[in-house]
Length: 123
Image 1: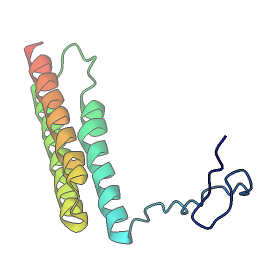
Image 2: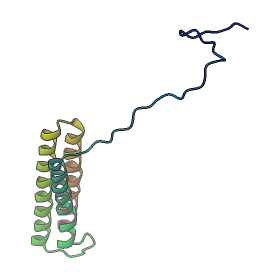
Image 3: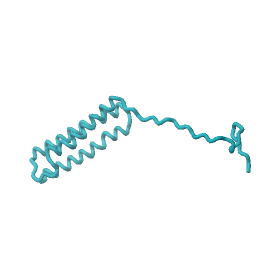
Image 4: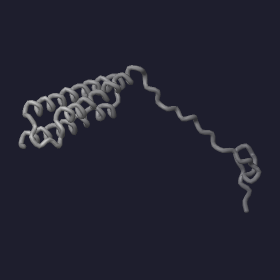
């Protein structure tokens, strides 16, 4: 068996075991403006999803067309709120993930609002 030596001259079997040193994990710390944008984004999500369901429940069998239009308008206002908040957060943080975070829910909530409005008006 050959005697393997390290660069400092010690033999491999003589070297004491030293665990690798790891850097401490640094978690991101969002600034106050990012938290404000996120809070406005959450308010926009709530306006675009909860308010329309309070105006016209999805289980309604004979909804008033005016109430359906108001519910759709509430959805669009909420979508506008969270898209603007998401775009401002994207400009502030310069992160492409935040841009996706802003636009993907807009497409899905907008599609859902259109489908729900069409379905309720067809009743």
